[in-house]
Image 1: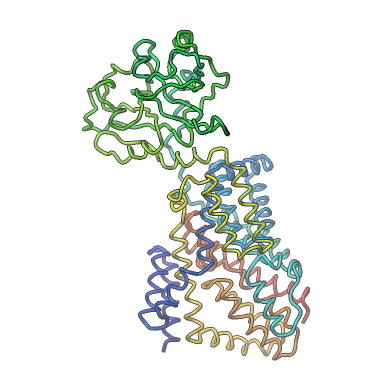
Image 2: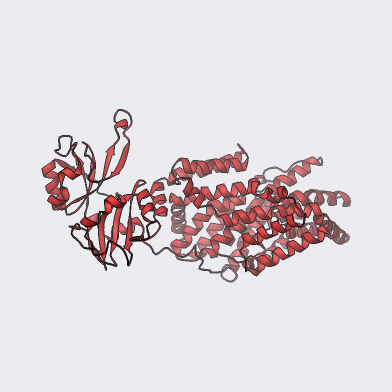
Length: 612
C-alpha cells in the first residue's frame, strides 16, 4: 500500500510542477507533508533535507555569488567576455558555455552555476537581453561538465567506490574524461541549434532593469561634480578646534560643508586610519582635515584665503558616496508637513540627521542659497548622510518617500573596490575544493564567511538577503523523495523490472535499460542519491551477465548527470529557474530532446571507451 501511495504522491507532485499554478517550493512542501501524513516518512526523515550538506552548500554559494556581484567582479568578468565577443550574441553564447564547462571540470555543477550566475545576469543586462536565453544552458552544461574529471561530480566518486568495494581498480582522475568531452560537445552543439527556437525570452521581474537612479547617477543629474570642492585644513588655520556653527560659513560665504575626512587619533602614532564624518553644526574642525564643500569655486577660493585652506588636487566626483556616507533622493508626500515650509525652518538635519544638498523642482536643480527656499509638492530633495540614517528615513511614510533602494546602494558602496578580494576568495574556495583540504561544504562556508569578514558583503543582513529561499526550500523538500522510494521498495521494483525486460537484448540492452531507469529517476531526485541507489544494481547486472562492470558503472554516473527535464532534477536547475523566470514546461521542452540525443550518444561512446 505504501508503495502505491509513494507513486501517487510523486505523480501528483509532478503534475502540480507541470501545471505551474502553484509555486514550486510550495508544491515540494505539500509533497513532503503528504509523505509524513501517510506514514511513509517519519518527521526526522522528512526534515533531513534541511540539514543535508548539499542544501547548506547551496545557501553558502548564494552568499559567495552575492559577493562576486556586489564587488563588481561579475561586471568586470562580463565586460571582458563582451570585449572578446564584440556584439555577437552567438559568439558570446558559445564562449560562455565553453568557460562553464572548463570551470565545471574541477568543481561541482552547483558551485559552477553559483559562480557564473551573477556573471551571466550581468552580461544579459549589459546586452539588454533576457537572462532566460542563457541560464538553462548554463545549468545544462554545468551538469554535463561533471563527467570531465573524477572530482567534478559526486556520482563519479560513488561509482568509483563501488568498483573498489567489489575488488576492481578505482577510476583515475581523467578516466571518465573522453565520455565527458563527448557529452559537453554534444550538449553545446544542441544548445547552439535550439537557442533561438526553444529557449524562452521571458522578461521576468529579476530581469527588468531598475529605472531608479543610482547615487553615481544622482551626482551627475544634480551636477554636483561642478559644485563640489575638496580642501585641506592647515594646522595654523583659524578654523582649527572651532565648531562649524561658530564659523557661520553658509551665511557668510553661501557654501555648505557636506562631510569631513580625518585621521583618527588612534592612527596618528601607528597606521593612519581615515574615517568620514557628516558635517554638522557641532562638527569641530581639526588640522589636516579634508573638507568637502558645495558651492561656487569663487566663494570656495575666498573661504580658502580667509581660513588658510589648500585645494586638494584630486577632485573626484564620486567622493560623496562611500561605505559610510551616501546620498539619496526623497519625494514629498501630498500631505507632508514640509510643504510650504523653508529649508531653514523644517529642521531636517535635526529631525533626520541628514543634510539637504539639492532640490529638483520639475527639472530645475537648486543647489545654492537653499535655506530660504520654500518647498512645494512635487519637489525632490537630494539628501546626504550616513547610510544608516538614509535607511531609517526610508521607513518614514508620512512626510517623505525615499526613491530607490538605499540598502542596495549602501551595500554596493561598501563593496566598491573589493573585486580583487572577492576574486581571491573565489579562487581560494575553488582550490580548497579541488585539493579536498576540507569537505566541499566546509570550503564553501569558508568562502561565504570570508565574503562577509572582508567587506565584500556589507553585513550578515546583506548576506541573508541574497539567499534564494525558493530554491533552498525546493531542494530540501525534494531530497527525502529518495528515502521514500527506497523505504517502500519502489526503486527495486522498477529497476529489476527494466533489467528483466532488457536482459534479452544482450549487454547493450541491459546497459540501455540501466541508463534509462537511472535517467528517469534522476529527474526527481538528486544525482548523488540516484548514483547511490543504482550503482549497486548496475554492478550486480554486470556480474550476472558476466561482463566488465566499468561500462555499467560509467553509465550510472553519466545518466545521473543528465538531469535536464525538470527543475527539481538538479540543484542547478532549481537555482536558475527562479533567476530566469522559467516554467516547468520550459525544462520539458528543452530537456527531453537533449535527453534523447544524449542517450544515443552515450550508448555509442561508453562501450567505445569502456568495452564489455
